[in-house]
Length: 460
Ligand SMILES: [Zn+2]
Image (cartoon, rainbow, N blue to C red; front, side, top):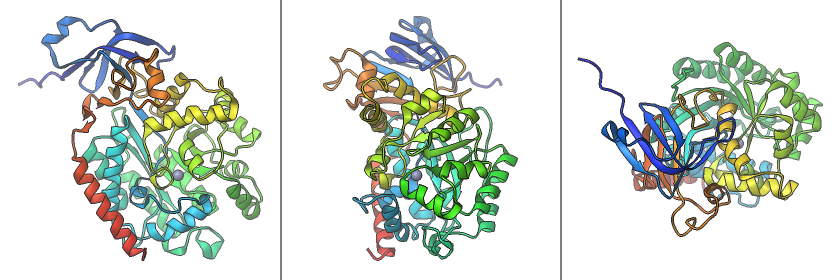
């Protein structure tokens, strides 16, 4: 018996922003997906002969198709620690939150991650990272708990095995209750890569290596982590140049600014991406551009914590690869990727004026930029024949956007375009603004219970 032919989905009559190298757009176009990949994208309606073969034929009139959004920096466990430390800067906020997150375990993290990933999907995200760096001694398999959450929702997932080994006793910021020994962190990182990392072109799951930050990690852990990641062909990630407090810490402890410190450690290259980079020096920007070192720009979190506005237009101009990120939910209570597009546009213009960032540049950062940051540019990030069918289909025909001159403007300028359909590898995970694989009420109930458990454990 021969295997069944891969199923075909046709979307016809929608506006399309392909984000291909020429920035091709169609005012009324079509997409054909076969199995997990795009086999046609073009102008005008789809060929009617596809109707005989298509398992699904979607009338896309009044809609905009874009590549699925790519979230390049997140902390999924923070969904259940939202609402704390509302008026703190980064260091004050972290110091308030550490005792709460010390109480996480496998069950609470799964509840947090599942709800958070459901929310990410509902905001048009098809691929997200997660920077998980808190591994309490009796917490069980918390990294596995986030992976199970992604599998439930159906998202493509690039979690990191993060780590912290520089506690207060050694001059770091986090309390000893949330740090590991250097050796334990390195061994667990290697084990996570061996167990889960899938580098294939269709991959739904890739592990990156991510010691947390210069003020919570030793030099030894940074260099050991880089060795392990490079031996496994995995990527490296950490927080960098986020605040001036971090810069002062690095000057005091290492005698170097953050960008100089990571250069000393061998942490530059096309396999490295840094979260934030709000305060790079001119030399840092040149260094990142020359080495292909990438950046996850998180404008909402930077604004929420009052950290500053990253010089994104300057970094793009220099050739630094940049993606967008929502950052952890406890410093961006919204955590929606469509909101992040809007904030990226606004903060860039607050810093550099009205011509410093366009809607199209923002969409490119949130899609192709993110794919490049995560090393998936050959298979993801744009709507082109041969690429994986990670596609977001937004409604721009309602009261919010029907009369607008440019559908992409509706999406990026913040008109909140309802999400009609979200495909990951050709499979629908959101339809008509509803999750296909999970019930939002169950997710909310479980995460609320987990949040209450954590508060109780922390004596709040
Ligand atoms: Zn972060």
